[in-house]
Length: 234
Ligand SMILES: Nc1ncnc2c1ncn2[C@@H]1O[C@H](COP(=O)(O)OP(=O)(O)OP(=O)(O)O)[C@@H](O)[C@H]1O
Image (tube, rainbow, N blue to C red; front, top):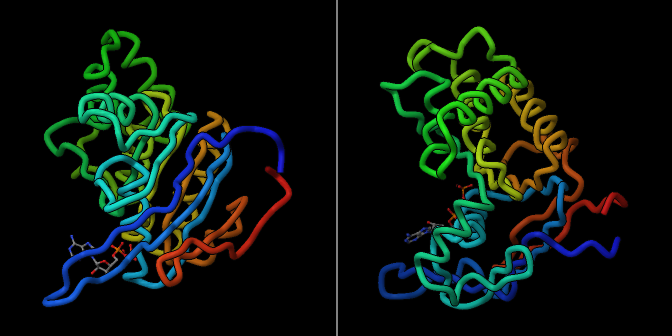
């Protein structure tokens, strides 16, 4: 372990859901640290709580108890506005389905969140073109989602997630909707780009093949995060 401080720390996270008359305890004391620039995998069976952990870590849902530190600052006790601001400034997300705006081009889909964050149109377009080009989409900038393949659409979603220079990318089955060959190539791009940009990534997936890209791999078991693979990188 280096002395670098984690960019994201989840501590003692508890989350349960009502399940008929009883409660389903999905997370019961989950801890995880993500260090700057590393890629961490979260593998595990369906229903084990991977998405629940990602949503809490990404400040999208409040757990029943626990802490989420981003850049050393505890975020769950902050006001909704502050939490939203921290989320916007530090976290990018990619889901299984791309959720692109279908009436807009690839370029516009990457430009819009940057303009919402206050960038000038000129700078936002330059950044969109840079990221889309790095993802091999230089010939697709002006295509709408319906005019692109599933892999291309997901690459646009990756560019969009990285456009505001997050410190952490949270990805929930980012290639789960793609065939195996496309899945490998899109994931390779995601890996290369996060490494290049120095963005840490926490990736939930069922796909064991993707663990070859991960610095460390965890699973969620009995409500806890437990290690499957550790590397000496961090
Ligand atoms: N809003 C909710 N209300 C009730 N139960 C929920 C809710 N969200 C999740 N659950 C339950 O919590 C458990 C964990 O769900 P979660 O989506 O975190 O698992 P997962 O590991 O991400 O699964 P998958 O790989 O299928 O996405 C599941 O049993 C699910 O049915």
